[in-house]
Image (cartoon, rainbow, N blue to C red; front, side):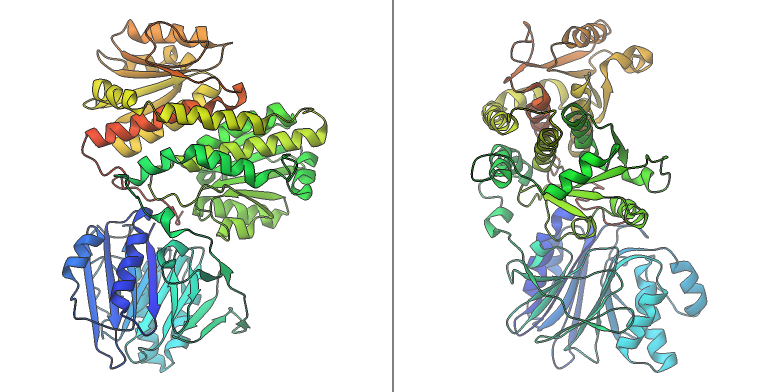
Length: 602
């Protein structure tokens, strides 16, 4: 969601901050701003509603300074506006602050400490910076002491960065629940919500944990915990290829990331195979998974939809009952757990706040946990007992494509290797079958012009649509409907095909698009019967069927793959359909309205 960058060094902070904010655009935002200050205490604040490009236009090109902080805001408290955009300043103009997260007790803090303070925004963030100024003025404490005291008073999630005009050579930072990294450079240091924001400056980053306070100068980094103890922590190397952050010749990141899916599948195969070409995973992960009496997959959004496919893989190959839960529901309404649960968390970013609050509870209960994520060193990766990486490379488009297929591929490998450990799987096949999937994806992507025409014929002017399927095809329908609605704004629902006649068919009108996914031979006839039902009521139908199950009139034939892996190919044309529908409607494909890539608040 919101993104933070900060720089202190000997170069022009303004341009570095703007470039960093541009790298954070994928997270989703509605306004942005930067604050810079030079060693003579000359400072400049620039804020603008809308895109970073709009912010660039209002930034004074002569405002050179060697330190500063920047922010992209996704509105929570207060409408998108220049007044509510970050950075925020104290009433006396001395302190400037950016914040990612949600402060739950901001009204209480306002009434207790700031009843007579004039506020210029509707945000919870302004309360923080005004409180710091209040504590410095009323209690005559240092800026660092006021910063620590304020952080201790906050209830909720936050990543903070503060500059005091009287100390332009220092940036203060703190975090709780919301992600924040410190980057180390030669003669400079940085802070950022995501390593991608500052990878053009350094690849050396220090992970911060909840409750830590950082004092940053151009040459030093001091990290303290809540007991005021200095923490020494080694930096890690962020393995991000700058070329991966560039669209290249593609018009949108989503187009690039869809095309990268075959390569991602092959990369996953290589990453998890040993020198003999056999999949190999941490024995401790396998032992704890096999010893469990139930697997709980916890996730949100696209990852939740991938979890349903993972459920089928795990149950068929390990015979361990598996449940799939929405993080936002599970954390506040936890079901009755079995005696030996094993938890799997799916998250592209590894920073999903709803999933993290579940993981905190799972850790408190002492249950084993495994995170599947695309980001090494992310919060869910650090705090879970085990991690399996997706190896998908940076995913910039808000609508996830390659992370979804990567999650399913890694879950398939986990299921097969665990099945081998129990003796239920006697022959290695997933590696070979995933190779066939990668080739199948390539063949679908080479025929994308067909999907583009379908979008024009069926969806470019439609106000609603439905996806239907049975079994694993229903799980794909869930993801397909999410993808279409989030990038094209066509109101779309995914349904189990057999449920149509139990109420949903009442929504079918003349011309309503209904897309059916058919990959399972055992239930293909049933789904085709449902297609006939909606056609009889005037629906315009599209059928994606697997080779060998096709019939005359089907719009797209999917290459045949292992029945357990059909979602990896059947989802690709639905991604393309969403992409082209969005494009034809004139939408910003990579940055859908109201959405964020990393949901770092609950």
